[in-house]
Image 1 (tube, rainbow, N blue to C red):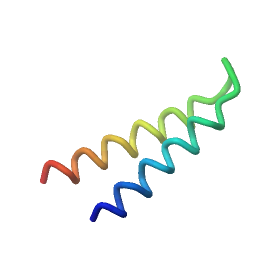
Image 2 (image 1 turned 60 degrees about the horizontal axis):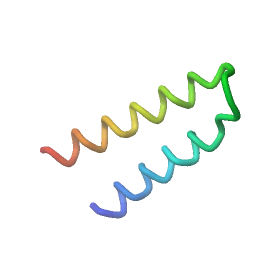
Image 3 (image 1 turned 90 degrees about the horizontal axis):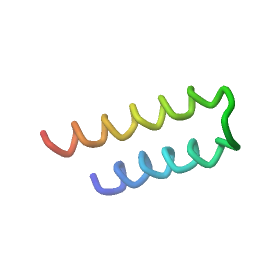
Length: 45
């Protein structure tokens, strides 16, 4: 289970690294937020 969370959080970090500055990076931010929310939901089950 821990490995699943690690992979999800690594995906978030990868998405956030893709943001260079103010631009159309909302998709990366939204994907990262969704990933974090899913991890937290899974952890609180």
